[in-house]
Length: 46
Image (cartoon, rainbow, N blue to C red; front, top):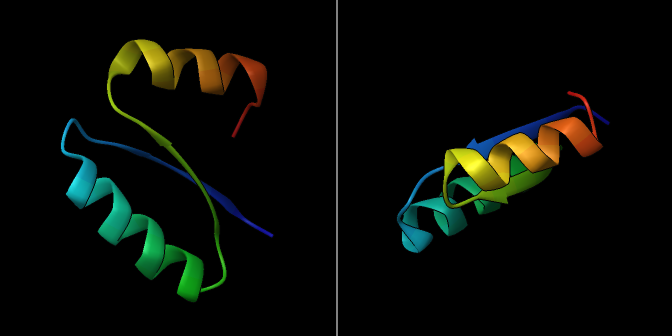
């Protein structure tokens, strides 16, 4: 399953995008800023 990383500081936007991408068949990771996103990418390369 393809994985997508969504980075946005607005929780409602992250939730909406996560929902839509999950419905489209993607595994979705979310982060509220670049620091968290960097940790996610280093721990699980895209």
